Image (cartoon, rainbow, N blue to C red; front, side, top):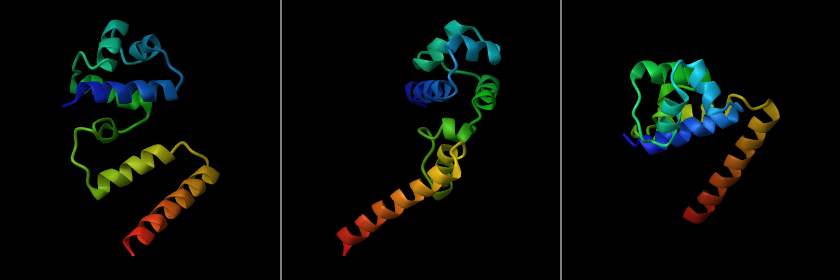
Length: 111
């Protein structure tokens, strides 16, 4: 398990919600010192703490642990869902158009 990557992902999600470490720590009933150590990858966390954390951040456990889990089609699709869930429909459509452009570029290279 790469705790530094997990900590980085936690920090990114916390920033996305405009929360301080102290606010997040209070919300999930841990000390802000412990929260800082988790985000720096210096401390591991229990399953109970991880569940409280992902529930507060509004993400899934598999998203948080995606760096530690082997990629599969299901995992990749879940990551796309996590990224796009909070976006308005217009941005989702824009993202699809960007992906189509990227994949058409790959198809041209293979031809």
